[in-house]
Length: 535
Image 1 (tube, rainbow, N blue to C red):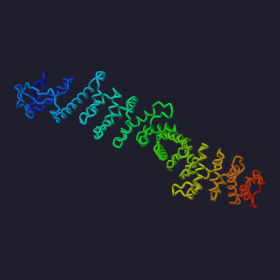
Image 2 (cartoon, helix red, strand yellow):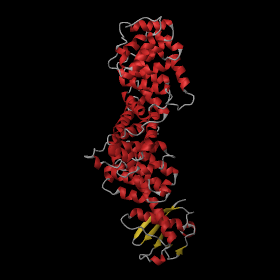
Image 3 (tube, rainbow, N blue to C red):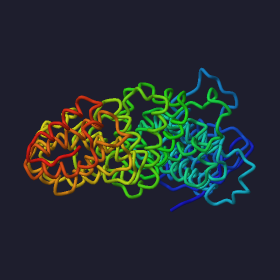
Image 4 (cartoon, helix red, strand yellow):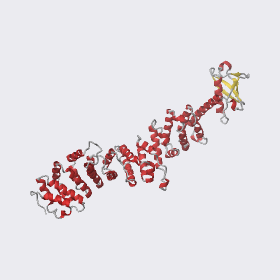
């Protein structure tokens, strides 16, 4: 059964509960704890020994029921003066650890059960910070439990404490503590922008990224919130006063995140950087990483319906901004990224700008998706039509042999088999230069008899004649038109007659005599005695 002991500590008396099976050592520990809890303004004391009411010392290992009775009076033996040479180090540190654990539990209970306004005047976070330095698992668990209830009452103090915990080797070496801290930080971030602002002051992202492999979801959410806060900072008055940019590793982490907010924030930050040449080069550093960076962005965003109206236009705007100050450098080299850009031209005019830059820089787009190029030709946007025509011509010329299976012959076969009507329609494009490039493409295809027959059936001869006499066309364009007409005229009697009929009253040999190449083709068309005449 339980019984009470009256312990005298100096001039104070404390009533302690005990059980018959407790040892004197248990009584000493309980007396120390009781003294500290009752007299909180006094320094903790260490009881060296216990005497009974007759002054006999009781050994620590003795069982209570062997030497004491219910209601017995005992006396604590303490030293009022501490000599460093006489300190029992194991006992000292054990006592400290014990008191720290006790105080942590008490504080946790107070925080969870008391009104916030009652505790607000007291330095709660001074105590929290002391607990955070502990390597006692129980103390830290009590701290995190208390912090869960109190962190919204002092945002700045909580942010500083989280930074301290995320730097603690003991916390970082224990999965359960580490996960508990990250969950609390995640909840803390989700409460308000003020909470995120307080966290941002401690530059936590590099520390968080080191924990991403084991705790990706929580880390990703916090990193996205911190990066989002960085975007909301007031813009600097001048480019020279820009804040240090987010490291490329941080951006790549967010770009590969599972949450839509991560890539949303990362692309917004990239767009902001791209508005300044200085900020962009400082952040991205080595320009050789830009093509791979943009390729990754396109791969990650394309095909996600949630990104069609926000992230993809932002990526394309970033790319066009970068082109403004780095036009001499490649922006996209990956064939699959090019393919995505080609697909995006149906809805995004800026994709055409990027493709035009690639064409101007390389002379080709690096792959041979004929259907995609023809789709660009059929786009109502004139610049897109022009890029599509130029890409087709480059593919037929054999300039883009990235995929060995897409040889010149294969491209030629696909064009002849499927896409002649679309090319014929493109001969009536509003832009003269586009029409002339399409004419060059058709000239390469007219070596096939089936193509020549189909071109005539589709009424293409009149379009060739129109380009031949077009005053806006270059001499090169007139030569291409004359060459195409000559190929048709020399193909068969019926086609020669059709060419002659189309040119009669429209084309004069004298008018075509200004260029020897054009004149040669015109003469070639008129040499057959079966052909119609034109003056």
